[in-house]
Amino acid sequence: MGEILHIPVEQALSERVRWLVKLRWLALGIGIVVTLVGDWWLGQVLPTLPLAICFGVIAFYNLTFWIVASRLVSQEAPLTVQAVLLHGQILCDLMLLTLILHFSGGLENPFSILYVLIVVVGSILIANRFSYLYATVATGLWAGLLILEGLGIIPHYNLTGFRLPFRYQEPWHIVAESVTLGMANFGVAYLSSNIARRLREGERELYEANASCELRAAELARLNRRLRELDQDRSMFIRLVTHELRAPVAAIQSYLRLILDGYVPEERIEEIVAKAEARARDQLDLIGDLLDLARLQEPRRQSEFTPCDAATLMNDIVDMLRTRAEDKDQILIIDVEEDIPQVLASEEHIRQVWINLVSNAIKYTPEGGQITIHLGCKADSKGERRVCGHVQDTGIGINPDEQKHIFESFYRTESAKTMASHGTGLGLSIVSGIMERYGGRIWLESEPNVGTTFFFELPCADEEPQAVLPSDAKAPIDKNAAPPALSAPSS
Image (cartoon, rainbow, N blue to C red; front, side, top):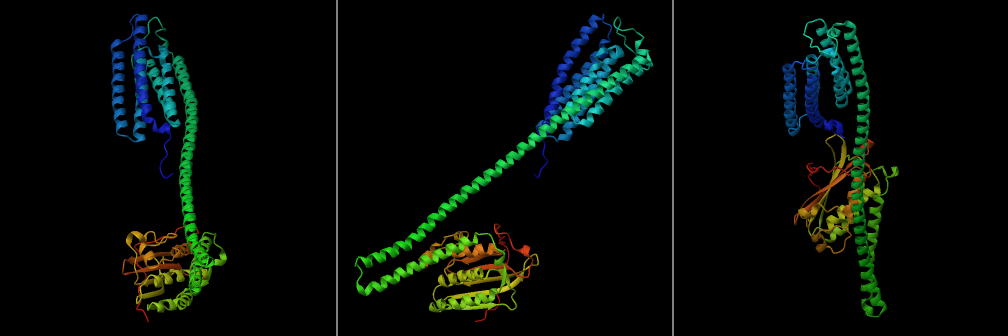
């Protein structure tokens, strides 16, 4: 998931540190009470001052650990620092327990079993490998204490009336006590650490399963939002299509009804029929564009990827549309570089690109304007050759706030609606879809009342197949990429 995953057991390390401090306060209170009662019962044979110092040291370092732990939590200290703090507490407990046992009878004191309790606590709170470390330290401290007392290196405090005064010097007692406690320590370390490990693994699995469910839930929520957006787009598309189809049909019906009802003089029948025919042609154009748009949403077929000559197709389309430009006294400038490679695309789709771009330039350029069509080849930043072209006009231009919508279906700028009332608003959407389909891209530069230039690029047919994007991918549009250079046009 891109970041270190800490399960709750690891995240709650600071809570375990503070829990151990609280447990120590309770143990300290019980220890003081048991010591006082035991000393009274044995006839006050225990060294009160050394034991009081030991209990005072425990209270001091416990308070210190509490303060440090609270600050670490507030400062969000790393887990390693908190783990060190936890290790320090357990090791201090083992050493102070050894001192207390020394001053309260050593081998004669039955509370040596508290070593096992500390090892159990450490095994539960810390990772497995440290469980055996605690067991080793506890056994070593206890065995070392018994050996030192048995050899007379340190004094022995006998529990008069409770145990024989010479028992601590008997080797077999020392060995038996050490081995017994060692076995108990390592046994509980093994059992406790394995139980804790399994619990942590179970909690980790639950946590990861929960995280996976949350990710899936987020993904489902994202997909659900996307489905709602697609449903809204579908509804909007249906409304737009219905509106665009109904308008010409209603006009044709009105024209025909006027003729059938006899409201049209005989000399105007031909005029009304011509208008009806024009509206029918508009409807056919719309239906054709809708079919083209729908076909672009279909899965790509390998047969579509055939080498074709974009320059030849461009010349055919310009020859077909030249009459429209001449009717408006427009100047057509064709600039085609030499040895332009072929593109890997459907000829019909490349024709549609030229038809839509050139016909739009003619339609939205006033009389006497100029249209420049350029086609060339260049290498992109990866060194791959791409056929690049642009169609530049001196027309009405496009406002900056409208440019981001220009490739949307049925979108027409206000100035375009004013200049030409008829239009489907699908042409540029079809061109954009074609570019995406074949791994190309299209963008524009425009200034209102100055003109518009549509730039496009397509991979060359001799490039590797991976240069073509999948049909559901968006072709990257590099806003900072320099447009194709304008060569000196030839009339």
